[in-house]
Length: 445
Image (cartoon, rainbow, N blue to C red; front, side, top):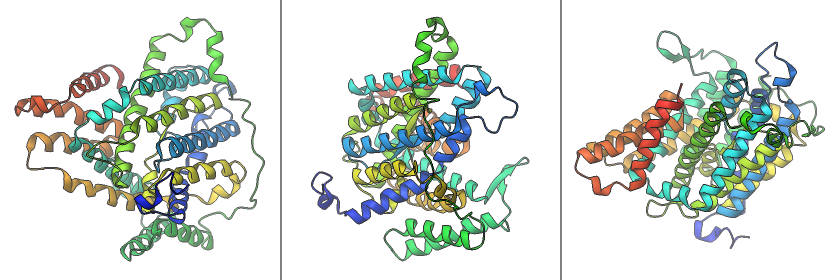
């Protein structure tokens, strides 16, 4: 096992990989609760039951899709990257596809399934890997830094430190709020542990924060450890039901928009996550991603499996960077994460202790680590600085990794051509320029 994952070469151990994998699980365990709530449209009152997906079935589908995706990533690509149904994509699935478009959730799952199959085909042809390797190193570094700012913003938001302000969009939250104070405690503790160079500092910080939260009554102590696993029958295989209906119910303009959106967001969110996490872990070689094809195949396969079980698009999680910061360097960490998702099927009541206040400090600290790539960008070259800066700043400001990538990638060919560096632009970057422009014109509402 150690030879398979190259422990000695990468300077890691079973202990570090286990802590890293468990840290990643803790950082993304919220999806086990958030995804079922989102897809069941629990926040929308007075909806027909037929429009709602079964909460318990979606919970099981979420855990299984995350487990299968993480295990595939660990075994095929050997990267410490975990997968689960993506945030943002699940909101699009529920609030746009089902509520706004009026598409049945069964047909929406068909759209996810089709997008996953297309991804697999693109991956097998090598096109997805070619696209990622065609991205210039400066933009890859910018993507990593931008995601760092994005998840730091997410962490502050989850902690209640940054809140909505109608006058200036965002503002400082109520720092006397007990949950916010708990998150601040976790952040201070984790910073101290990180500064002291303690291995697994992020993991220890989250555990300590959870214990303190329970002592002060801010985190509910589970009354039950093991619970019954809900049935996945209400959603399992529903993605195939649309194929039994007239084809004109599937091949519509709305469904085309749905499939293209799933394709677009998953493609570039995954690309950004792979680049950012592997760069943070020191796994990039000469600006290229080794075994990128296998990583993308694992991601694509997880989407198909997730659609069959009954959940929205499964994608690589940027929270994996928390595991990397805790020491993870190989696919063994992803296998550990996948194993915990399987265990979560039986220990769902325990997940009640994983709150935003617990995971927020980890996201903030990881953001600090990820923006270190800013120093590797040549800011003295304006033609490079502009697209890099726009990529970085657009991610937190638009609340979208994919949108930040799109804006930066549109400006890159423009500035490079004007500077007379046309020959340095890979032909694929011109194609991406056209695709992103069309995306903003036709798909973004």
